[in-house]
Image (cartoon, rainbow, N blue to C red; front, side, top):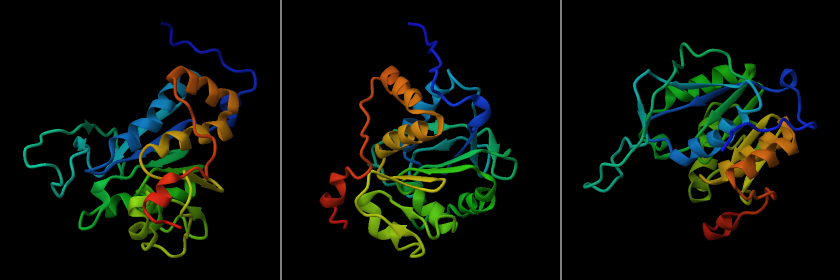
Length: 232
């Protein structure tokens, strides 16, 4: 089938929207935190001249494999992404994407990623986090005074990192100013569609969702996982 999509008449023009995205990676990132939002953005690239920069501490491939070896001893199952730039050589980005994953749990060291977020956030137009990625943004101090959410299974740990953040327990995703924070893993897909809707236009979000055959959750307060994990 053709991948050509008709540009919706109501869509924002290219000179009015962010065009560069920076993905912050570290060993042990969660695959769907990354590839769920990226797949929607892949389709967005049929409509806009957007660019993706994959950023990490070094240019070595970054694996989903947990640094602390949480996998079953008999497992050999992981995926890797090759960075395009290091945190030190990264170009300026309009949208900063921060995924979660077991790799950001103590005692793992994600200090270089947190320092990068702290350094570049003032220059970015938007921040987009998924799952425990909001904990990294919080530790960078860029969510102070903002409402935010995170994975409900990790809510107590993540919300304890930074009391200056107004942590929202029951939410699929939260938007405050220029920051989108999604709850656990799959919530990043719904959150990225909300981001696309707000920034590029509802018709663009609908077009991409239909192309992906994805049924969007449209209510950011829909969150059965808060009750499941006893989060208020």
